[in-house]
Length: 529
Image 1 (cartoon, rainbow, N blue to C red):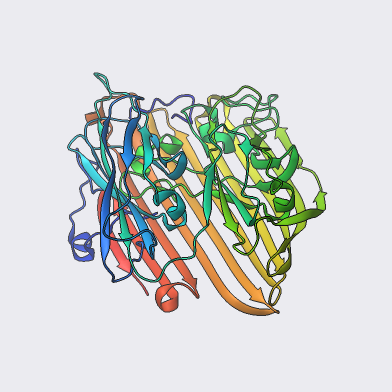
Image 2: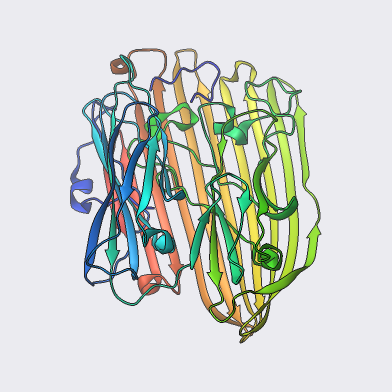
C-alpha cells in the first residue's frame, strides 16, 4: 500500500454518532492504542414508516481468501413487491490489519462493494447501509450468496474481519425498479429479453490489489524515473463495448482506501469518499436495444483504457438492468448514430531536482438509437464527455510526492417519445490535491484534500422537473514515524469531512453534515440543515 519508495506501511453511509459526546471529547497529544469507530458524513438511508422484514444474508469471519457461500431466502411476511430494500453490514476487527476490498453477490449479481477500515489494537466496529431496491428482481427468488473480503491473518497481521450482512424489506407503495437484473456471469455474453425498452449497464470498477493500480492516478510514462510507470501515464478510462463497438466511456472514481497515501492516520475515523460504499459506473445502453433484442447472445466487454497490458489490479463486474415493454413480446429498433471523437491523452515529463509530469486527457462519445414500443417510437441519445488534467511532482527517492488532479465526466441523456422530450444532464467532478513528504528523521507527513462533486438537472419540454447538487469534501493532515514499532510512531493528525446535498428529492431540500477529528477523537459532528 506504500506510495513512497522510502516508507514501509505497517499497517453508502455509516451510522452516525452523538454530537454532544463528540464536542466534549478530550484530545490526546498523539494517537493512542484506540480511537473512535469509523463514521462518515453521508446521509443515512431513509426508510418508510411501514411494516418491515429482516433477512440474514451473510455472516462470516474472514481470515484468508475463502469466500462465504450461503443461500438467500426471500422474506415470508412482506410479500414480493417492496417500497425499499436496505442492505446493512455490521463489522468488527481488532489488532493489526491492512485495508481489504470486499463484495456481496446474490444470484451472481453484485449488489455491494466495499473496503474495510484499519483497526486499532483494542478493536473497532463499523456499520454501512446501502439502498439495494434496484435489485428487487433478483431478491424475489431463492438465490446463492457469495461474500468475500480477502484477508491475510498471521503472526504480524492479526486482524480477523468479522461481519454480518442483513437485508431489511419495507412494505408500502411499490418502488419502480428494473424488471430484470442480469449479471454477466461469464464476463462477456449478454442475451436480453426481446421486449427490452430500456437497458442500463452498471460496472463496479475498482483499482486495487496493493500494486501500482491502487495508485493509478500517480503512474508516470515509462521514460520518467518513478516507482510506478505506465506507457500512457496516469489516465484511466472505463469503456464498455457491445459486439466490439464502443458503447460508453466513463471516468473511474479515484478511490483512496484506508491505508491510502502511505498514511492510515488520515482515515482511521473518517474514510475517504466512497471507500465503504463503492458506487457503480452507469452506462445507458438503450440506443443499442434494437440490436440486443434479437434473441441472440451478444458480446459485452468492459476494459480499462490506459492500463498497461498484463498488469493486474482492476476489477469490473457488470450487471445489466432491463426495463421491459409489457405490451409487446418483441421490441425492435436500430442504432441511428455513433460518433466517437477518439481518446486524446498526453503526458509530458519535465526532469529536474523536482520531476514533474503534466497530463491532459479527454474523450467524447455520442450514440443514439430508437425502439418501437407499444406506446410508440422512443429515441434515446446519450452524449458523454470526459476531461482530465493533473500535475504530478516528486523528488529523487520520492521523499516528496505531490499530485493536483481533476477528473470531469459530463453526460446527457435525451429521451424523445411518448410525452415531452426529457433530458437529464449530469456533471461529475472528482478532485485530488495532496503532498506526502518523508524527512530525514523518518517523519512522514501527508496533507490531502479529496472532492466528490456532482450536479444533475432533468428537464421536460424545457422546464426543470428535478435537480440535485452534491459536494463531498474530505481534508486531512497527518504525521507519523515510519520503520519503527507501532508504539513508537508518535502519530498526530486531523481530518474532516463535509457532505452537502441539495435537491428536489432531498428531504427538506437540504442535507449538510460536518465531521472533524483530531488524534483519533471525533471533535465535531454537526448538521447544518
